[in-house]
Image (cartoon, rainbow, N blue to C red; front, side, top):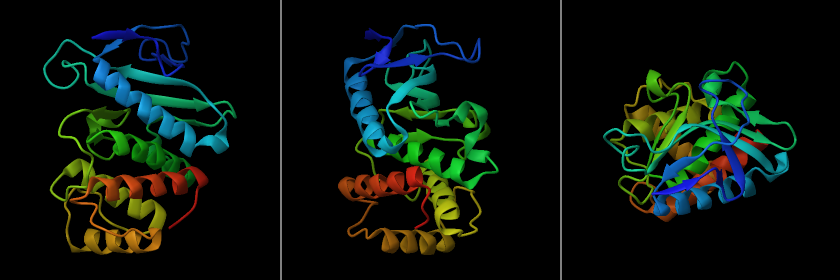
Amino acid sequence: MITFSNIDGTPVYYWRSTYGDTSSRNWQVTQAFYDRMVLWIRDLRSLSSAYGTITYLVSAGFYVNKAGQHGAGTAMDLDHVRWSSGTTISPIDRAHASGTQQIRRRYLAVDATCRRRFRYVLDGWYNSEHADHIHSDFEDLPPRCVKGSVSDTVFVQSMCNNFLNSGLAVDGDWGPLTQSAFNTAKSRLGVTGDPHTTSSVWVSMLNTVAQRGFANQAF
C-alpha cells in the first residue's frame, strides 16, 4: 500500500463527517491502483478543461478494512469534483437524480471517465447504496460494455435517456429497446467496432460521451 493525500497533485478531501471540510487527509491504495487513478484524473482534466483546472476531489473512501476491492486497496468512491471555474458535480448530493438535465449529463460525463479506466463502476442508477457516490474498482479489467452487467446496462440506459431522450426504463435489463437506443447512440457518435468485445472501442465511445456531457450536447 501507499499513502497519499492527492491524486497527481489534486487534493482529495473527506466530507462525510463535516460537509465542506478541506483539511488534508491521508488515504491508502496499492501503487498500481494509484497509477490508474492518475490516468483517470488526467483524462478528466483533459475532457473537462472548459471548466478550468480541477481544484479538488472529495471521496468517501479508498482502502477500507473489509472484504472486496476496498479491502484490497483497489477501489475509489467519488463524492464530489470542483473546478476552478466554480463548476461542480456532486454525487454525494445525488446529482444523478437532479431535475436539471445539464447536471445529469455532467454526472454521466464523469461516470464515463471512470469507466474508461476502471471495469466496475457503480453509480447512482445502480442501486440505493451508490446513490451518493460513484464507485470504481480494479476488478475484471480491461473496460468493456457487458450486456449482462447491471452496472453497464443502467449506465447505457441513463446515457440514452439523457442524451437521446430514449425513455428507457433504467432497470439493468438489456432488452431490445435498450439495444435499439444503444445502436442509435453508436451511430450518432460515429462508433465503429464492437464495444462489447473490444475494449478500445468502448473506451473511445466513452471519451465521446464524456465530451458531449461536459459540453451539455445531445447526441
